[in-house]
Image (cartoon, rainbow, N blue to C red):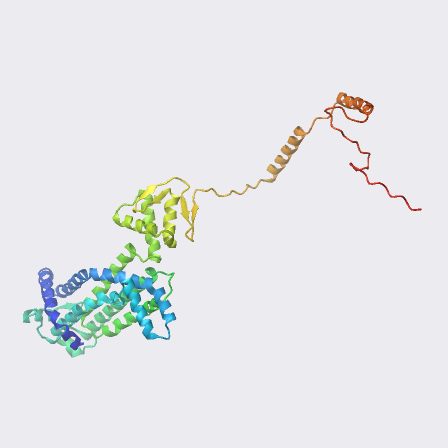
Length: 429
């Protein structure tokens, strides 16, 4: 570790200068020899470094999402050239070049932060050994050796002996209790940061080896922090715990405001956006317009949560436009099904007939019978019957032909079918 810290010694002077400047500020408030002054100086150093690394963090988010998008293609290449490792590597590099992605981009914040971490370790190690380093002179060195954080000196370690801890003006019990609590908090914050990334901000529709690797790292990193943490000075533990908490908060903000498409975080984000847009009946700012514009531009390639967002707007007679704005629409606009096809949202559904009670059915039957009686033909009067009988002889006199305008009707005998009859066959004697 000393060799690596010595390699980054070129940055120890700037790091020590920043710590001294913050110490002069907090020392005027809490006192120059207090743990608050030196501890807050280290915390402020972390915040300053992480603010400078925000552009790299944005690149890390974009690189991670690009790698998640490429996982299906990478899996195809691995299966196609599983017996030719060289060709597999060439195809992988070709894929990275065509898509403009870099696997190392996700490690940029850690790589950029490493020099500051080792420089701070080198400065605190000099304080522990009583050696001046950078801009820290003898007066500042003596002040730093007096500083204690909850009873533990800044330069003390979990593995230090009782004599060494006593030389720093503390007890071994205080040092080990404080360092153990800080190591547990550091490992827990690292585990939670990785866990929220895997459970909320990963597209669950894509199952690739990359997800399995991330799950493995979720458990490996906290163990690594716990193992190496016992060899870190208290000041370095303060630094690493602060940067873990910063990373956790920064990632929570990114997941909430700009989640990965297809993840649970996107579902929650679009639900909140739908609630705000339907309440205001418009997109309120540029960020909301950008989200709506991106969803509209996807067309049939929208995922389940994006289609649900569009259908939610349709149900309240709102329509998303290509420029990201939302306007009112007429009833019956088109909604999207799960397969991306469109269906009319205003078409009424077929209604099932209402079930009637027994009394209603009986009442309806009685009304129907009365209606049938009212519609039945009236019985022929006697006068009309006599007229019909008087017309029969007249028809016989004319040769059996009916009068003009009167249809011919043949009256069949009882028990005899109408129409031509089949002749009876002669009986055999």
